Length: 308
Image 1 (cartoon, rainbow, N blue to C red):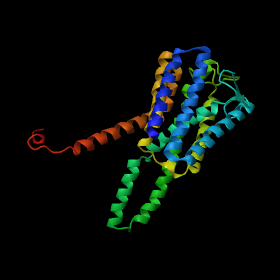
Image 2 (image 1 turned 120 degrees about the horizontal axis):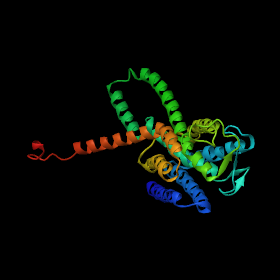
Image 3 (image 1 turned 180 degrees about the vertical axis):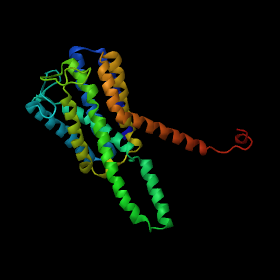
Image 4 (image 1 turned 90 degrees about the horizontal axis):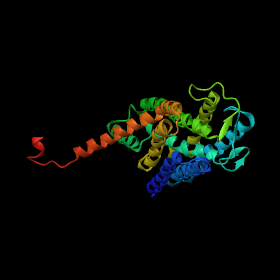
């Protein structure tokens, strides 16, 4: 049921995004709002159905609540992103912030987190493999277990740091696509856009640094609040992985071909590649491994297989 609902919402979201380059003006602004709401429902709904109310509440508190707070501070003070203002095209505002803006943080925070978990050994198969290996080790003797536990604590800390780093970059690098696209539409404007990245005028570097800062705070808070249910991934998370990779590859195509934003296509492709490319490779290897296991378990046919 979780996967069916998530896949359905993802399909609707993808169709809405495909329509984006085909629209203009108020229609495009309305479609942008609808897309963000769909993305929020998809991510929060998946967290709720796959892991329960604690994880969903943690995601909303950290990403939606935290996103609104940091945006309100940013609009009022210019910290940490720089000085900017939102237009009125994205719907009603509170404290100068359109209400859909914190929903956008939430939309991509959850798939970025799950992608990082998958890349840092949080897959169900990996966990099961470790459990099986632990059982065999216990059967052969527990004398070396305490030594391995000490090394394991260091490995766990390293995995946690790597997970936070990947999730942070995986989320913050999305803004290399998002900000140029939204600024080009006039949805917000920067009062002082210098210094800027080469090819991306109108957006200060401080904006991207602000995204990194808030993303690392968000990801660091998500795991303690969400609990151990957020430490592993399984088949239920395939729609979220698909969402992350769809966002990556479709954004490259859209910016390069349909939106006439080639520089942000390159910057976004390079930034999100830190998480998206290893994730793609991991998924392809896992699929190949499943295919090999499936071949190994095919019934042997005397006189046929012997001739291969």
